[in-house]
Image (cartoon, rainbow, N blue to C red; front, side, top):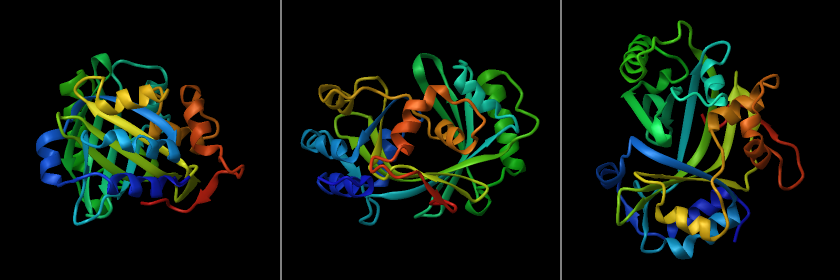
Length: 272
């Protein structure tokens, strides 16, 4: 076993059969889904491996099974979308670009909260070199999606508020449309500098049509319960010291209170 999350992802996915991106998109795109998140030490992430065999395959693109992601989030100057999440508003949303750094592909995306904890994602292709800004086409997309989904107008002013970077591996359920993502090496940055999370932590996220996929049952049997975790809200909590982020304090402690006793690391720019 290893205490390093990035190495845990490599060891775990290497033991599973491969599945290509085309098959993932065909079987498990799941833009409308139920999400459950679990924050676990790397050793715990590896401990589930014996029970994953026969249930999941690992996304493999050109022999690569760990992929670098960068997400830049946009919010109002007074952090409206963050506050909506903190208040538990039913009609809440996140605005972001997501860049797949290994392929250079990028999307502009709205992540909408629906009824019964269902997540609805709307996206459009975007130019990766402009991922830290919102152009006119993205502004129109934002306005159209919010009117269509919630019958509300988009905020007048939206600016970049935080960027997260991480390594991700994706598992696809063999007997259904479910998917599991495993994230490690999280960084949260703002204005070119920020904080690196404990490298020993792994965020496991189960994404399925219903709330009881095989990985949920495996983690439940091991005594692991879902965590309240939002990478954006955690990023705001650590990058904006005057902002109240009470719902995510447990996740912030797990990610940024170093298991080795050291302080959180100050990093320039993260993965993005």
